[in-house]
Image 1: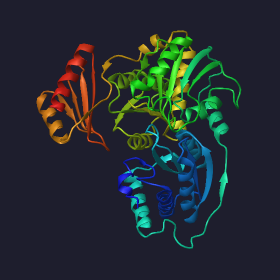
Image 2 (image 1 turned 90 degrees about the horizontal axis):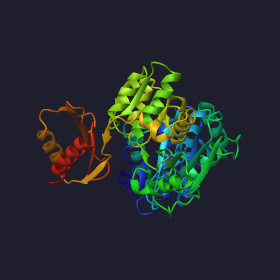
Image 3 (image 1 turned 180 degrees about the vertical axis):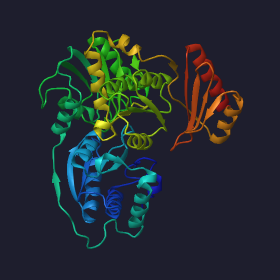
Image 4 (image 1 turned 30 degrees about the vertical axis):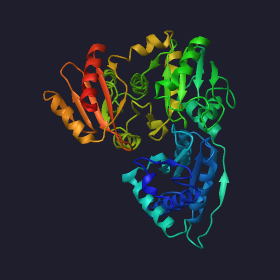
Length: 461
């Protein structure tokens, strides 16, 4: 029997199949999700369900849909989808939704990202804990589906062309200079969405020459993990950009809700720089608006937001926190160090594709190469995220705090210490593993390396 406490995480469901969860658990989760919706008078009488390319996804999605239908709501099946395509469906149809994906995790994993109507997030404090309890009770009773419950219908819809058309209205790429773009889909859902959104599979052609890498949908990830946050998974893209003489490279994660960028030299462009770049574009359209940035984004992000007349607001790491803060402040845009990008025009949800389109538009609207153009948004030297396995996390953090008594401390999310010279670091515990995550930034490389090494020495002692 599945122990759902092992797979229901802070923001979603995630675990190995079939040992941690299976189709019976998926059906119970579908029923529990619908019970929650019914108890809170969620608008509409249907739930949108989509899934990624993993071998277990169709079966899990079908079982979840059976649980939904048993609890009195119909199902709109959109089939293969990226996570942001599911958010588009939820937003445009104003219906709750469920996306079956384990994002960048290895092949044996699968999961569910659930949302309320209008793509509003569901996390532990906004319904996920209650869903877990309801589903566990159904499993413990021996019947994931209530006996005698009515079964509502299911219908199939193809929303990919509508999603592509909506994104193209938000960012018009038709008038930019011709660009050669290498896209590494990592055998994930970018291989499904990119040909329609950026190619000419369904809409009018754009001045883009797309060079595809690993567009074949394959949940076993035969080429590399679909996790571009790990530099090892960018190597093929970096090489291809240089070999093809491309203007830019894009790498999507498994469910294509995150996008990483490399320049024409094959060098990564930091998500902080992309956040600042997109923020400047959105503020040009919506002057004076609020822009949310994650706690670990570069100091340059808030500086650039202010320089463009915007109001920067910092938020905790994690999509549920970012989305909640965006909704509270009516922010026009939000960005994180993990390359999640959120848009008011996209129901405050994250979409790697729309961020990629903004980057292509910014590059194609001027003549400079990306390395020079993006350099305007890179002001400091960052370490990137460094993980350390630590048994006594609280003790390690306390020791680090004591080592820097003159720094200004912030405990919004882990420990952030800021120094008079502009250097800072954040040390925070993982939600799911015995890891401490360190991010360091400083005005110079020498200062960053020195601070990074000193903190790591204290953490790992």
